[in-house]
Length: 189
Image (tube, rainbow, N blue to C red):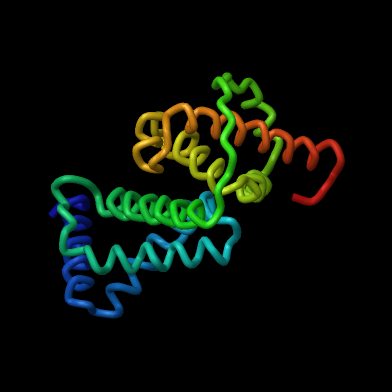
């Protein structure tokens, strides 16, 4: 039996055990994907506490819907990632309902500061992203990190495409300002 087949069989056994609600299997699945999914949640959340709440809510959805997972369609990692991103979007929608923002129409412009980002650590960039408003943070993450197009973002967040573009421009501008303050003035993020 080759290694890939053995790995697929182990994954299927783990999933079957999780569906049977075996705690040790659920713990194994959780621990396997915790770090990567926490990273996803941190990009959308206001802080690490909110990120943990989103992560736990996402894993509840994962365990409740694991019986719907189709291994022939996608990998378990991609399936879990999709659920976690959707849980983050749900979090965004809830937070945006509590807080409305005035949206100005701004034309999207290309960001030429890509090289400037390389001087910051991942932690500094994550802290800066967390300082964005929920609307800006959601659009920035979906566009820049997840690779969605503005049309898809608009559908997911129930906003217009122009609002998505505007929020992306504003998010980039705000991130640049936050990082410049940190670099130029040594201010804490």
